[in-house]
Length: 294
Image (cartoon, rainbow, N blue to C red; front, side, top):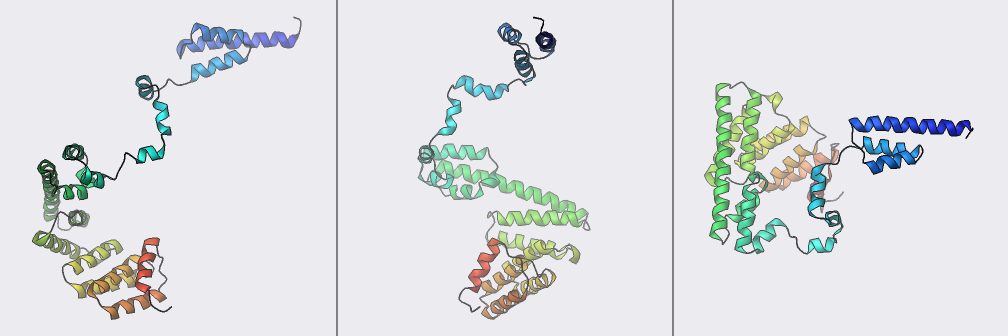
């Protein structure tokens, strides 16, 4: 009992217990059993008590599933084969499911962003189930109406501020998105392509960067202005000789025109240009170079 280390240990233990008692009053309270454990176990007991007191409260939302389903934690260990047996791509499930299931899937799609499921909705327009086809057509019609309304509002602002080039770029992006959606066809598609060219042609030369330049060249080709598209693509290859996009755009134009001479000349130009190819671009260029001598 006269050992000074033993006495010091007891004093330290009692101080820790006292400090723990004060702390748990202002933080998480310990049960009587937990506090008795901390009191009877020298030094280590109060340390465990501090950890329990300072530990943050558990999130009730995380515990809710465990309360309702005791085996919720085991769901993450399902065999992949078991999951694969009951899953299928949304497009395939939409085609092979019963009309009732298709309608349920369609109702779920109606609550999502239509832009994320445009292809599926466009396919569903021609479904043999009348109700499914009606829902899809109605959703696409409403989505198209909102696109046109948003575009009209942007064009109205541009009409009042014709020198606002940032607004013009916004209009260009909206028209491009509308064209890329696949909702336009025939004369309506032609009209929007002409509108896109009109806005692109009004951009100052300094604002026509590589991305917008390639967009204009592709659109010029679509409205059957191939010479202008070629001239613009060549300008872009001169301005950005190390970028792959202008070269691929020029190749695409010549392929579309079935101009073998222009295609071969462009490939020769690519050989001497120090182009930084991406994997996607390299695949395309390999296709064009296939069968030619090195």
